[in-house]
Length: 160
Ligand code: CO
Image (cartoon, rainbow, N blue to C red; front, side, top):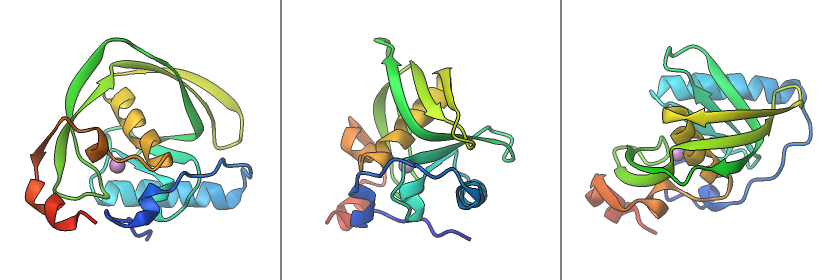
């Protein structure tokens, strides 16, 4: 089972590298990430959170079984319409905060076979993708939070 890297591990602050090899190891680790995500009741997980500094992430589909994988994702459009919502993170357990994110996004990415795909996301999927993509750039939701709603004391005790 993959181990989740927890804040304030400096590994979470790295900028992840582009995926170039779409091989069986990648397929295997994606499935392990999905398992680790559901094990911890997560709805998204980025590779740096399991100690892999590469640009890919998984998003859960709510049925605790299926998933989507986004490799080398780029957001090509952010709606002007933004929404303030409460977020948490498997790398920051018991800490929650309010983050403002675009309600609709367009994403260009590669699938598990390396084929380029485009998708329009809204609702929870759009929020989760923005959160997970931040991990690929070393950004955590606490950096963007307008307010910490739960776990401020934990956060204070962890701050490097
Ligand atoms: Co996170």
